[in-house]
Image (tube, rainbow, N blue to C red; front, side):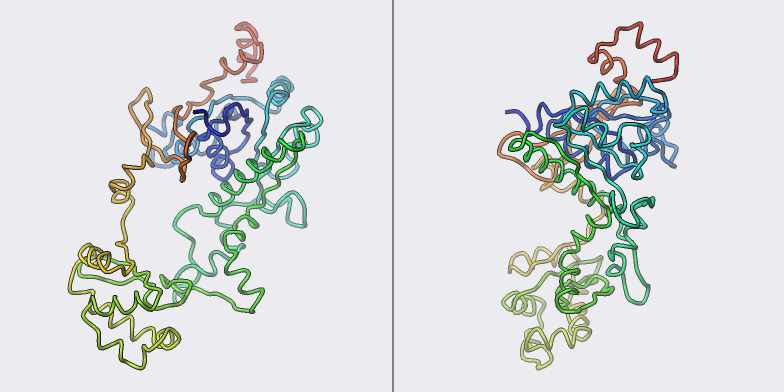
Length: 397
């Protein structure tokens, strides 16, 4: 069974993470993605670890979001390269770019120019603040957007101040938003026959994922701050607890769950304590309740408690490291990590975060070395071997 985006052709000008993540999601689902890179390559190809993969221009963070793509190197400052871009776009369905607004226009390949060339084109532009507004021309990076979007203001512990999340969260949220926007535009094109601009602002994409906190403030005036590892519900049994050998997160949110929890940890007397008679009083006396639970949890390991709580339906989970997560049987049985061969040996990469009844996303093509598909792609456009060599000699590719 074919994948959802089989036959969709994408010209990908994106760099670093937000844009490449968007194109990767589409590529996993069957689109033919041609990644346009400078002759020096995407900065993400070369990291700071100095390992063998980085020396090949295949740094692990870059490989994570660039499998299933084909690499074409072009010097976009040269007219011959722009001519190649226009040929690609004539037969493309989607263009994705994450330059600062105006850069593509100066090159003559912005939305207006390309949509005139191909009225069915979906043109997705990912930027920090969008294509319009007083901040639109401002460069943006993940850390900036984490700070400006409100994300950092609700992350961390009050005594330590705002904290970045432990991954490039705004890049990834923006990339996923862009992929959804592209999918939406492709579907709408089946009704209208026309392409359109998909304008993705990283700050808005991130705020979209903070809908609960933003709306709660707008509706009630509530201002969320840092709450450490406490649940957004503020219920004290939705928190991080120390056990005998490690950390355990409880997600005990309902009255029946709370009663089962207190009995399982051997503290049934707390159920009759007036400080804990209902959720408002438990929240008001959160530190006392936390101390009672954590004292009990110190008598066994995190794994032991997790197993016990699973048996009585009191939701909990051990805090696992990445090396531990990738070894979970649950992850293995769902083929979440997919292996692909390279000339230097196999690598494992993350696939899609969802499954379809048919046509699920998969890693089918290894992340390309820089310019790996120059001859192949140009050949598809009608260039013969001599013409390709001439372009190479003129440093166009």
